[in-house]
Image 1 (tube, rainbow, N blue to C red):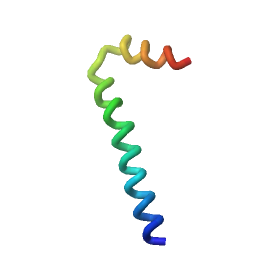
Image 2: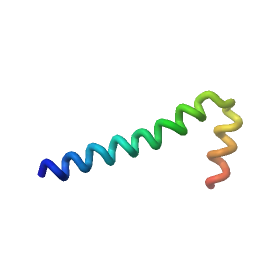
Image 3: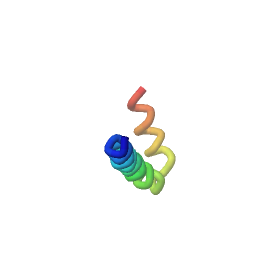
Image 4: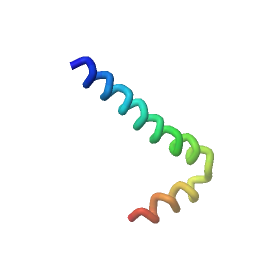
Length: 42
């Protein structure tokens, strides 16, 4: 049980860091840049 919990914690931390880095980077750009990136995915 403990190994599974520790595995979940480090994976969650890694995922949160992977999401936070682009979010912080894009928050400094103009809204049109963020909109352009989001609209390309659709």
